[in-house]
Image (cartoon, rainbow, N blue to C red):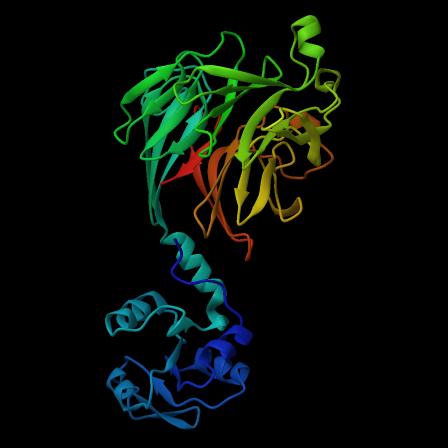
Length: 402
């Protein structure tokens, strides 16, 4: 998680209203900050002993001890490129990030880069490749640990894996051979439930209200509903076409349950993707009646992951490399095949797989990546960083932030 949210000077004025205002750090950054503030400051603080007692910005530079002389708790703007160290110093003095101090918006660019470069988190991701004995490639479930500018990953479950969700203190993974697999936090198999053969199970979702699981079946043009014991209950067919000829026509990928709604992403609403008609959508079913309600997001090209983020239905328009949110508006674009989506409350984590369909995108993009990576993305600033993975691990399907 980030230490600070992106702030503007208008927001700073609101937070600092009625409080003593302090700048921490002298020099050009403080001067630029003061010009933007539109009000005088009460103190100018600096850790550099050579600056103490000198005059800057019409006031005398003081040390941190001078904070105690103020009437009331001040609002502090950090005006030095050493903002990470100063923020830790202020936290040690009992000041709270954002409510008591913030990095000056003048330093937003550097601050956001620093936050990206110092991010620490643990991710899980799946790969649908054929399973191999190699601990760093082949299909399976992987754990990736990010620690600042370094990251490492390892395979924790081998198999042709696609869907992945958190299930209480455990995980549910879609494994092509084993079916629906429940793993504990040490990645040991707790139980597994077989799925019909040849359906190519892909995405998975869970309803906390009913306790049921939902699995998309790419080769069968349907979503299977299973009870808490992994026993099949109902099927949600995308159309009658598969029942007629036994062939897949819609290429459904992932699903999401929200309340009484089941959302399913697919390559083609009409069922003509094999004829190069990619009228991709996110389709809604009513879980109470089983009725197909119709598409809620359209004009998608090979869409995959669907999620509810910040109360907004969010989907990856995979071939175009677009992240859609807020009434299906594009909030981020990526150069590769975007598949795998997670959010930690501050950043998006978007999987990028090797683009096997790049010729379809020629003329629409001037940068078609064939790299495998997990991209950390900030939707507000549009800043991202890429966690590069080796080319032999060419597919990412689902991502989960721990």
